[in-house]
Length: 463
Image (cartoon, rainbow, N blue to C red; front, side, top):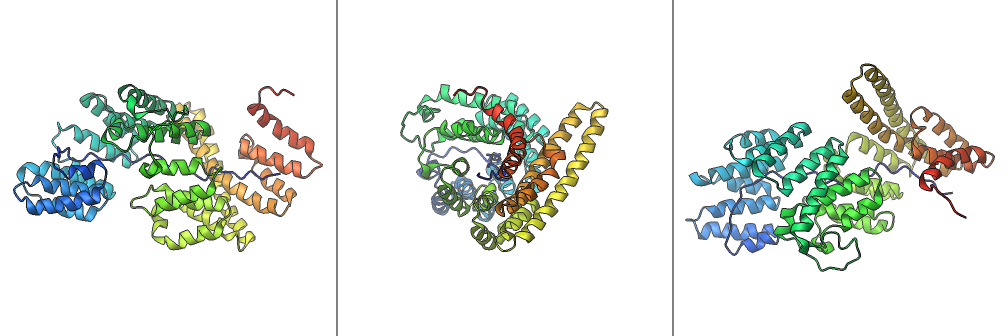
């Protein structure tokens, strides 16, 4: 009987970064070729030379700074911006500086700079919305993005930003509605991009990473659809969201799509998943979730040495990209190799902490329901569900230690202490069923746990 470890610990990366708007420029020189093909480092070198060769064309300073910004060479970009003193370029310089500060996560100074934009500049509202989003103020961000849409008309990137706000608010139907609109418009306006053709089995040549593709926001929208479906455990739909994308070669894939492909393919080809995540981790920048997901997947497949090595080699990433919960969880996992008892104690301490929080939230939900505050009750229930999703992996990890020792009675006792909160959760019920089944004299009890799970999967069974 194969143990089904709880797998909620590995989260999909979401295309969550909303990029603050930088100056809109009309580059007609030869160096535009580099920016068209997203070779921003070479573009920056060319513009640096043009700044020296053409001192009477100060716009090259803006293009130089923008290329450095797009290449994530932020200190140099800021230095170039600081040297722009031409009156007619100061507005663009402020926009670019605000974008650099935003990317550096210096949100206070980014906001100060955005507030220097002219109030009638459409980018004023959009970039304030980006800042609100980054600060977790999703209602404010949503209102501003809607205002910007009213001012500027429909734009795919704004529709995507609105969808993303709904996602953050856990309003998944609204999220999918906006995604569907982006995709439908993309299919109608740009049939040459081949949206959905790969899913239907049609072989197409790569459409490349064109400006047109970027302007449609199709890739971002379908990555967000992947995140919704993955979170809801609709894994076939999540896979379909990726294959619906306009066809590109693997070398042309953006970091988010590559990461999502790695996640969805891990069960079929773990080695390929690890290779993709390792590659992403070597890039600058890389999707923030890459670090945690690589470590968690190493632990899931019991490559504890590799997880320990990645942690040791990247201590500078630990505090930036791991929550305290994730770090403690990984630490407990890595301890399994040398001391299962120590690992059990670490998992137990974390589980007790989450269990206390579950008790507090249960009490809170009951109190709020008595006051008939539906919104507060919904938020409290969501908080309970999120805490339960943190508790379950700890419980399963504890149980797995004794499962490996074939001490099924001990595993059963571990599960029974969690019945108060987990009795309706399918993963908990399935693993309880496995545990009872392995004790042989408890087949009838095991059947009682298996039956409702099987009934959900197979409405009619024919022999």
